[in-house]
Length: 149
Image 1: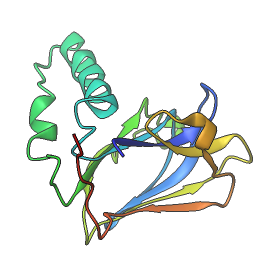
Image 2: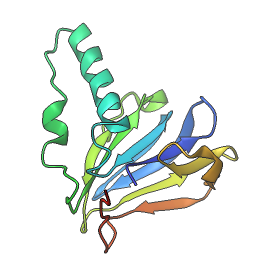
Image 3: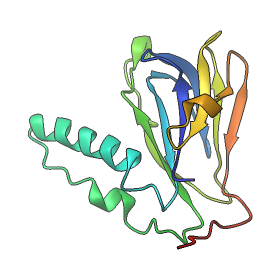
């Protein structure tokens, strides 16, 4: 598995509560990308590159590459990024990127009644429903993936 997507089935905004370690935040976004070391240059990489380009437009010289350094095929951690975070009435969204490891899982509780899914590697046909009240906990697996050539 390269990437995991948690969010709306269609191109809409999703409401949820995100918990990572001691931090909890109500959010709205177009979803989250969780990436393994195999997928760090794919969907996660493009999400981070877009955020860096927006920072550049605001005069901030940002390089997203350090955010994925150390994430390799053999890593015992994952990285996540929130796509298009929307602060809503909260005024600010802070919990938009992080590392998931054995001690720090990522927990997402859906606040959308329908059309919310979880799927891997762009395989929408295999998506799991994750509607209002559903709680998804993303952690590092005990086993490791093996590349077979």
